[in-house]
Image 1 (cartoon, rainbow, N blue to C red):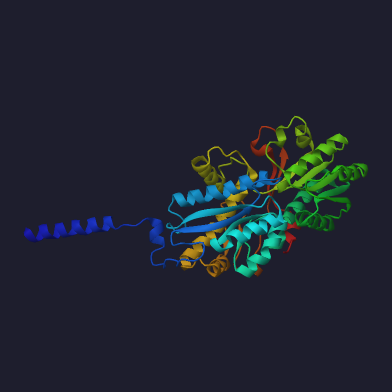
Image 2 (tube, rainbow, N blue to C red; image 1 turned 135 degrees about the vertical axis):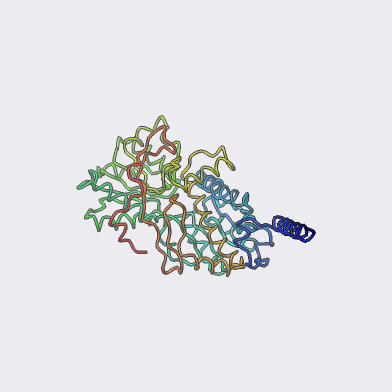
Length: 416
């Protein structure tokens, strides 16, 4: 009897020890991986990521919600213990005011104190920062959809490029009443505008239409002359590459000229709230389509949207529906997948993160945005989906989807 009692006590003690030393599933998954050594931007506990974005100035209406999307994603990760279940993430922000000089200055101020950049916003700004990223061995997630970034090892792009948006948009337009119509374009006079025009040109070559008139403008400038050219040419459809403040100016000038073409705007042209304007709302509803990506805000049948909305409710309950927030959330989701691989490798150094980027075969987002083939930069292949929406007052973000996840044969042919 004493032997049996001893055996029972031994079993209970062993069970008690096992319970006392149990680990979480996340920690168990990482069992055996060596802890990353401290490096610039990682002190053994906290991973610091840089953000260069317009928090003031003309593009702050994009930069602020986009950065909040970055933050909410990592708030959720931190609440679960952090990357690898152990390491919290901190964002170190610099206000670029959407100006290259400010962006470069901000980059220099924080580059030695971050492991990577979670966001660099603006096509022309990413171009300027890229040379320094290469020299410093850093990687960054661009908050811009130019196809230039697809095969750049120092960058972690997500989403369909602007060129894809333009091609899909005009395929849809041509096949829904646009055949034989006069097509024109107005674009920001920088690389962002050039990217959109490149897509429009490709669409024209494949769909057999010519762009009758193309005008360019400097952001924040008077667009009266440019809109006048389009109105005088009696364009039936106008491709638009702008940021929201210029979209508002362009639409206002169109209304003033009684010029009512079908406008097809790239993703960054739109700002939630335009749809309810007493002066421009009717024009948007009748004459504006947005070319962007992702499901309707609130569509919880999409797992990625359901996850994002759950995090919004917990960490930023005052956040209103906003397409830029959703992009920022997806952007951090991509960077998190890279960081998880780097932690698994036991190396959060600049070189270690570059190695992790190459090791990831695919970035996935549960359909919040399309999956993106990764691996070596030469093998990268972005999603070709575009969500085409009309404008409706009373809908989240003012958008009512005409064609979800639309992929034209022409967009599928694009090579980057």
